[in-house]
Image (cartoon, rainbow, N blue to C red; front, side, top):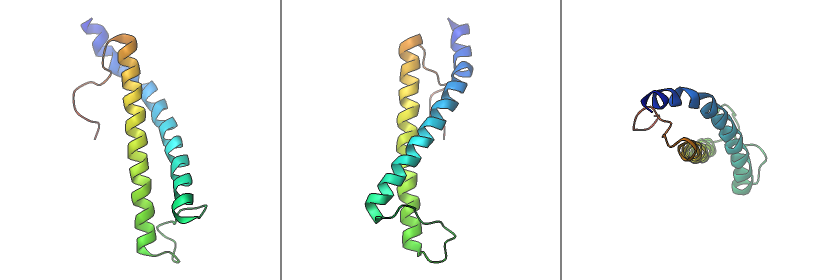
Length: 99
């Protein structure tokens, strides 16, 4: 059993990568829809756009960061719980977060 436990985090890495990619795509779509509701614009301001103020730029960054963090955490947690249910082993190498 210990041998299986050591190999699982390595085997989980490709799945974790795929889940991260899917989560990032979902977060991007969620941010686009949220920004359209919040500001009634199709595109969020770019930090280098000279026609946008600090408030707009920082609001967009804060909303985008919050959405990405929530989606990333939800996708990571769902993937880890699915692996644990299937194998009985938590896929993380050690306790604590990734960050």
